[in-house]
Image (cartoon, rainbow, N blue to C red; front, side):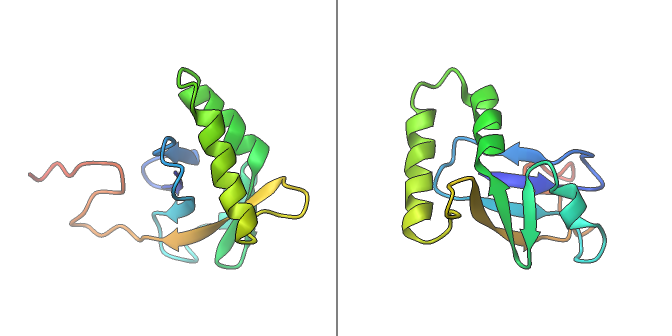
Length: 120
C-alpha cells in the first residue's frame, strides 16, 4: 500500500493499493522542495528525514473504510505490523509504523502512478 501525495492531480493524500500488505511507502509526485511534505503528512503521521512514521490507527481506519467487505484484511494488516515490529519499523508503543518516502517527480511524458497515460 502506498500513500500518494500528488500536489497537482489530487489535493488530498490518498491511500493507493490498500490490499497490498507487502509494501508500505509514501510516494510523492513532486520534486523535493516543491512542497512542505511534513504539513501534507500531518493527518497521517510525521516526517523523519527520508522516512515517515505513519499513525497505525489512521491506516487501520482507512483500510476498514476501503476494505471493510474483506474479512481477511485485519489479519493481513496485523501480519504486516508484526513483520514491521520484527524489523524495528514499529515504534515502541505500536502506534506508528515506518514507511520509506519515495520522491517520484512526474515528467511531461508519463502519467502519475496509478493513472494511465492518455497518449496511447
